[in-house]
Amino acid sequence: MIKNTVFRTITIAILFCFILWGNASAHRVIAFASYDGRIITVEGYLSGGERVRNGKVIVKDSTGHTVATGKTDEKGIFSFDPKGKPPFSIVLKAGPGHLAKTVINIPKSPPKDISRKMVHRGSSASPSNSASRREPSNGSLSSAKTVCPNDAILAKLESIRLDIDELRRDQEQVRLHDILGGIGYLFGIFGLIAILKSRDKKS
Amino acid sequence: MHISEGILPAWSLGAGALLSMPGLYIGFKRLTPKKMPETALLTSGFFVASLIHIPIGPTSAHLLLNGLLGIILGPRAMPAIMIALTLQAILFQFGGITTLGVNTFTMGYPALLCYICCHGIIKRRHPLAAPIVGGLCAGLTVLMSGVLTALFLATAGEGFYLAAKLLISAHMPISVVEALITGVVISGLLKIRPEVFEA
Image (cartoon, rainbow over all chains, first blue to last red; front, side, top):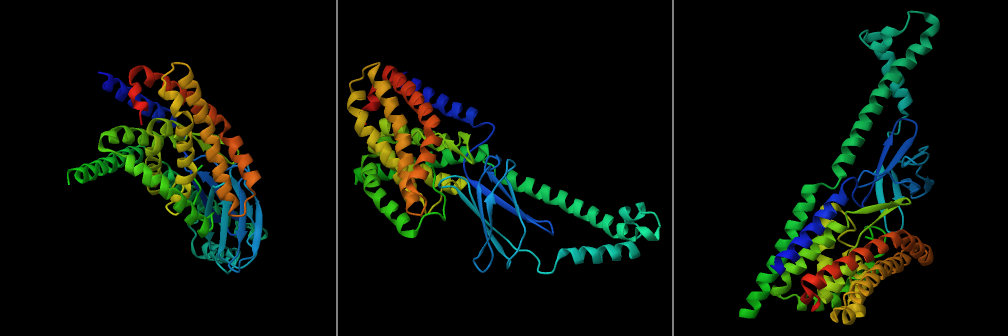
């Protein structure tokens, strides 16, 4: 009877922990870096999806020189101009003892030129491009012609990048089945120790 | 409180692992098959407690419950903490495998000290003194873990006082919560199963 009460109390305590666990969970720092053609953006998260605010960021290029330092903003974001030799190694410090590292490589040729080439090709060879179709056939607006499809592509890329970030964040979250699995492992490990110890005693 | 991988120098990691060995040895020696279910249950509590966090500054602090573990399990708290930390490192990447020794040291020895400090008083089973002393000791255990973590971070070039200040201020609310939880648990266990404190 008493034993049952103890087990019930501890089970309730563990369930209480699960209830509290709810919205966010612990404690691993994750850093993502992305390049939009001009700047590199670093985003810091804790494994519960919470953003790392005021986290210290140190960026070094492949030669080991520090190319940028700073702190993440309220959204957990830090951006810098990639001056130096890629790839860039980024360290995000989120308080004492908590650190995340990531590396980002960027293309050597400026993506501006690539996108311009793409746009020129797109405007001449692919009339189905929606952004090009919207342009009036006016010679004076030729510069606008080269900008709008570029913006459309960049916007599309940005939305894909955000989707990838969202998926990554989702993947990094601590899941209930992992916790339950962990508890199962714990009981298994202690069960194994118990078997080994009782064998020792018998022998 | 978990120190991540890639922060501490190799000698510091080695020292942490070596210093944890005596505590682990004594703990494993005391781990009898009869005490196994109780140890497994409390280890699960410690394992889950680290997932409950309070956002503070750029990071967050989480419950530890190492004081409670120390009070109930005594020397067995060291292997219990080590096993829970191993699973946390493997399953959630909290801390890390290389920092396992250091993290066991920073969370395990304060638990052991907590047991040494308040075991005598709790054993007397006083309905008021035992929960109060146990709760206070558990609260202080969290802060002591913070100081030990700061000590190890100092070996990586981070200023000890700054790290200790940050860790202690971040864990102050946690220590209050843990003191309350531990007090309530001790009070409850004294009523329903006082022999649990005969670790």
